[in-house]
Amino acid sequence: MLGYTAAVNSLGLPCNIMISHVDNAVYEFVKNGTINRESSEYICFRKTIEGMRLPAALLSTNPMTNAFIYEVLEDLEIPNDQVILGHFDSNQPAKITDRCYFEVDQPLIEMGERTIQILMSKIAGGKERQQVVLKPKLTIHNLSCFTAGINPGWKHSL
Image (cartoon, rainbow, N blue to C red; front, top):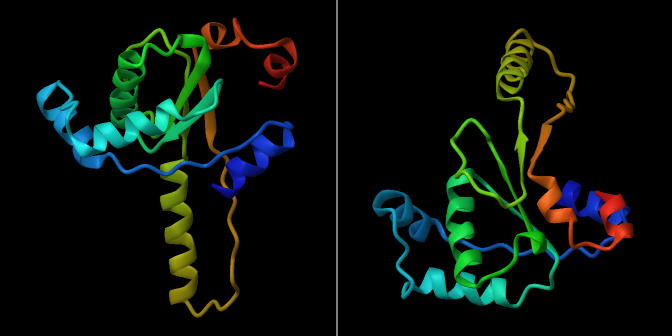
């Protein structure tokens, strides 16, 4: 989250970190295709979204969580141009939506390869500590629907 916060702040934008656990609600949504709008997770998350300052960007851990978030945004009738959603790991199918969303792909194969290389070096007696920086890939979908209602200065920052 530090990298995310630094990137947002470098653009001169406010950054409010919100951590919400909706695992059980997401599991039930994926399993049954419906949301239990009376569950404590749904109610808590809905109240959190209601309290957000718009426009906003939300980052979740996976597309399935975003599918749950899409439903909450629809329930609250939040316009498409007010929230951009993002998630890690686009190898999972994302819900098809007309909302703007982004995916952050982490180089999982390269991460595994580098891990094995470092482990083999340690086994061979290597004592040097290594720092590895791998670049993720950012893909943005339907950006035009998000930028349509934003002031030009903010749009430029995207």
